[in-house]
Image 1 (tube, chains in turn brown, orange):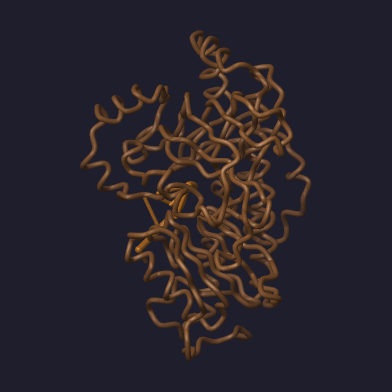
Image 2 (cartoon, protein in one colour):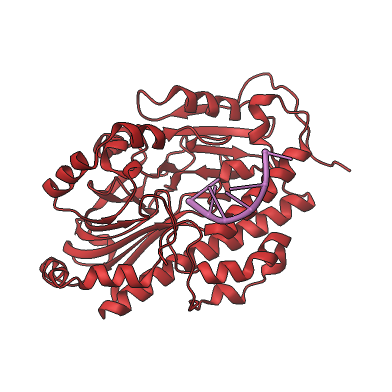
Length: 400
DNA sequence: ATGTAC
């Protein structure tokens, strides 16, 4: 009953390049392993790389007619969105004196594992066909309750000031207020990922140990087609999630955006590279085709970059999705002190509403160095400086 | 990243 392509060792690994120096060795090894798969066509490792399940975070992998659930990631369609408001920065500072922006964030999205709205949000993504997979079908109500929520881990909602340098963005270059969010497909996406990772592993019992987490589904198999449809639905759902977050926060403040920029950074796409149609998995990597806009955050106290892709073939039209961790969550909890983080936040003029100690700026690489390492992949067109930051509080419990 | 249970 198995119509999957089976593993056979290949003569030479698929070509692979990496950006940035001193990348974590384990993540480099994970990327090499991925290039040993018979379905792999090309790989690329971004300068924010760190270890993940199967493919590393910051890993990009093109395959032929196969999709690898763990090369998309657990948070399917994890995504960035940035909205620009044409109001003076001093209004962010002045109104925040009365707590208006804080109140809008606190009221209009929810943080924490399992967080949901009792009064559910509305969005046309709910009118899509959720029966494409048994998982999405069963989770539709949970997905509805979690629409407009932010979740936990490295997810955030921030207000800040943005310096727009490039007139081609469609607004006059200058300084504006912006809202930036990082969220994904929440519990439903995690359930989709988990279900199809199990099916992929069951389809490939022949894989050696180091490749088991890279088990694939042939695109024309039933499970492969289900996964693809569910993944695409999770793509729309994650976009809807951000749309709700931005709509409700902006309406709460009586603001209307003049510009929106957004992108998935955990997803798979059908693309043509070197004349071949391939499945490009980007797991913690920003699409960077020629002229394509994306958002690359740094940390709660360092700039985020709005970038324009240069269409590098060797990177499979990709760039990093952030600065990348330099320290595990566990190590951060044991080594770091809130007092040191608070001093840095004060120096940088950042008001932090809540976060875990494992997300403070010290756990991330210097975003400017990461941007320098990928100057052949993207150019910066705007810089965003966080001023008011909300992440899931320590313990990551829902707030109410 | 999620939120249940080798």
